[in-house]
Image: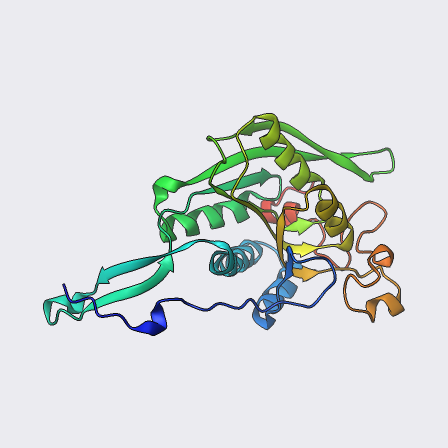
Length: 274
């Protein structure tokens, strides 16, 4: 087989489009007018089913592409095209996402089931499905008498095997306090399944409070988000680069809902208003 190489495909460049901030190198706030438009539609007061879940699926498929391009290993492929019957030069030789990449996707109920399924299905299309699995966690907020979030509880979990040498993806729409994500990671630790190659959180919206909590408790976590909401910050703080006056930034109200946010997105996704 004549596999002449075109140098332009030997190492594919990829540069994330993201916001500047002072939250650290593991935090990526994406800069995409298309994603911001879709997310604004999703969070709008009048958006209901079936449009809501269609928007969520679209947002997570697009975010998955960014994460895979930026974070997943690559390998060289030699793939004959349909033109191989006409010429021995009908072969693509160049970089692709490595089919050997192993991934675990954490499905965090109550708000993460649809996003995790979208990510799981997308990865099965892209990679070898034998190397892709979905772990399930039933997580609920723990609140005090004033309905403020004090943590999270994992009622049950299903972990399909070790994490060693796997990329761990955690798709959860709203990064409000970080309690659900941190408790999910703690559950992996408690089950002694090893350490992932990378742990990557995938959110539609995050708050400064979430970023402070997660980056302090788990500095190794890589965070991707479409939007940063700090809508309860003072006007002079809102005029600064995100993270410059981190301690003064606020995105959560008294009962830990995100502002401007999208309300109870878990309820919107399931039509279950409890």
